[in-house]
Length: 112
Length: 116
Image 1 (cartoon, rainbow over the protein chains, first blue to last red):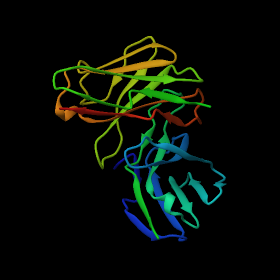
Image 2: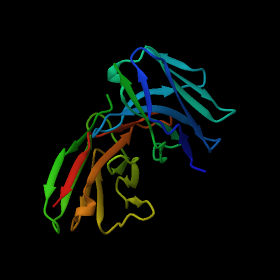
Image 3: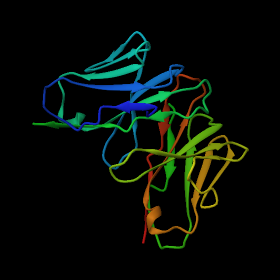
Image 4: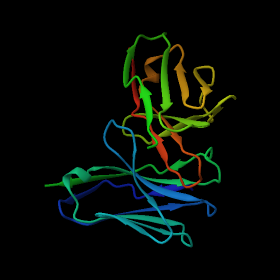
């Protein structure tokens, strides 16, 4: 079983749609969680951290369920510019040297 | 804050030559930096963890003599691809974190290496 698993995608949705991505992680002791987006031929960029209480940033909502070891990202009113690969990222350890683990990514394509 | 700068952004070199890539943390100190490689349409793959003042830790299958890492200061790590071959052509990305378990990784803008 992979340490971090994501919906494989690709997701192809119309502009304005709501889309949700899921991610599960295997290490129950994992400490912190993030969503990144990566555009084609670019470096990953932090989209948002994921907190236990759930958090929202504009059209984006992230949720964490520690009991089920499950993370989600919801994008509302999707825009063409949301087309990218979304990476679920898990920090398993206590120190800043801990190797952060990346999911394989979910490709999202928004069509006009 | 938490800016990571990587240089060069792209490089084309001939087979057999060596290429050095620099990664700098501009506004924070990074005792640890991470080097990734990404082939087209594939996931990021961690190559090695660069530790300031000590030897890097390489992931399984990554040749330490081919990918030389030096982390001589708290703001600079370098990756040297020695005797590069076409199969080394890839997107190399460094990253670092501010101290604190909840801090995310910040990435450099990556280096696209093409070996001809």
